[in-house]
Image (cartoon, rainbow over all chains, first blue to last red; front, side):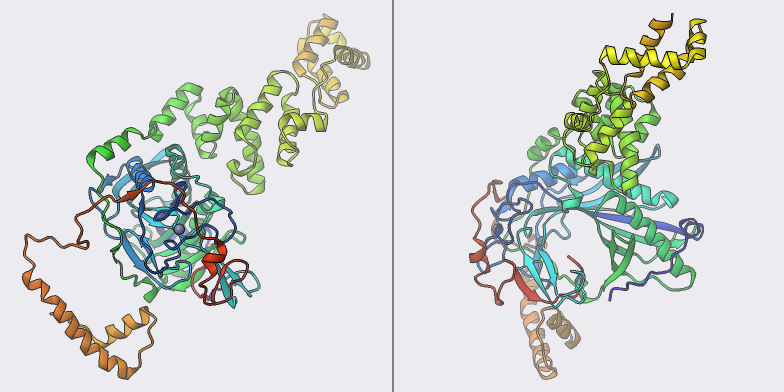
Amino acid sequence: MTTRTAEKVLSFEEALAGFDPTMGLEVHVELNTVSKMFCGCATGFGAEPNTQVCPVCLGLPGAMPVVNEKAVESAIRIGLALNCRIASWCRFARKNYFYPDMPKNFQTSQYDEPIAFDGWMDVEVDGETVRVEIERAHMEEDTGKSLHVGGATGRIHGADHSLVDYNRAGIPLIEIVTKTIPGTREKAPLVAKAYVAQLRDLLLALGVSDVRMEQGSLRCDVNLSLAPAGSGQLGTRTETKNVNSLRSVERAVRYEIARQAALLQSGVPIVQETRHWHEDTGVTTSGREKSDAEDYRYFPEPDLVPVAPSTEWVDELRASLPEPPRERLARLQREWGFSDLEMRDTVGAGALVLVEETVAAGAAPGAARKWWLSELARRANERGAEVADLGVTPTDVARVQALVDEGRINDKLARQVFDGLLAGEGTPDEVVEGRGLAVVSDEGALSAAVDRAIADNPAVADKIRDGKVAAAGALIGAVMKELGGKADAGQVRELILAKLI
Amino acid sequence: MPEITRAEVAHLADLARIDLSDTELDHLAPQLVVILEAIASINDVAADDVPPTSHPLPLTNVFRADVVRPSLTAQEALSGAPVEPEQQRFSVPRILGEEA
Ligand SMILES: [Zn+2]
């Protein structure tokens, strides 16, 4: 049963002093094919319940599945991009279990013959490269969505019955499984997050999925175990499901390390079990105990013939791959003229694609980095969100910078434009208009403000007349104050100097 | 020769959600042994040059193009539901297990 009482946890530092974490990550990615894996039903998100279903995906007797070629193609491309070997021959298998999210009472998956296997991905964390070995990537189908009725919280416990929508059942899914990742120590949470973030970017570059974690098209399960520090052993692992944002991946790893360490330290063994991640409270709770539910009795799917990609087909798909991540990073750094540190910060903030798109929308690389990494990253942090999920687009940022470049707003006003964008006040131009943020470019008004500042600060004015140009800052400050910050500091400075020298 | 124990039959029945009484288990377990033995006779003809197969058809790569075909309407889809649908969804007994 779910335990709602908070479990005892050690601090992360204490946990690491006593134990070494080992993790494994399973990522499920929904492909963006327009039709399902084995039938022609549409795959659009958010359709009315049970309107994208047919005899095949409802598992009605006699219905015959046929494999979606594009899904196989995407699976092979994902495998190749992850440096995997591609099976020259593989089969689908039935994974048998009774659970109403699959109307067939089995999920069509792959068992001991995944389409892709033995790959790797290099993950950058704090300027260090960690190689994550990929065990396999296999094809399967998504399940339906259940709604639990009668329970107080909409959760399964206490529900008296469940309502199922099968629109999602049968959507092509690729499950990407890493080998265990040992030796990451205190970096384990960051490595997990960086792996999922870079995998997401890779899938996005491949164009095979929408990779929207908030819509569930990219989902992560975290396997984690602890062993006594330095022992080189492998402990009993838990599998935490439902970890569906980048931030949660990091937090869930951190929490499980601290929780398991507290148990082990007080002599309680870890139970191999499924655990659920709770985004709201930041804890995991025990799910069902694994018993016979694990006995899936896989066998080859008799209704589907084997998939045997020819060398020519695989080579053709290999040729269609986008630039590998490492080369891409090196190229972008060269093009943008960023230092190693600037590049690392950009990647670390999950802003690489955002900066790239902002530059593509016309902003200078430095300006794009400045807004995403200082202004917007800070706000994302305040909200506990990822910078990509703020709702501010690269086009918005490029437009804000263009307004600055045109002298219509300054950096300070630009920050207020971002306030407006986050508050949903429309486009950058609409925010400037709506909030009256444009700088005073009317020469007459500026000139009058400068005259008043000079008159109010005769001592400062005299210094400037004597050639102490640095003193102009005080007058610029006075003018800016009078105009509520809505002036271009450079222009004000020029005016002051023109009047006094 | 394959041997299947009474406990294994009970476990399989449980996995298949078939409720078997002790009498039925006593009756079925020996029968399954006989069936498995009969099927195992295939091993006698299987030679090293005959690869194990799961599909009798010499076919691979049977694909369909990624094209949307019309689905059923929700009414059609739900028409065979054993219990009155709610909110245009299939109503199923309370599930204990993992959360969706
Ligand atoms: Zn269908």
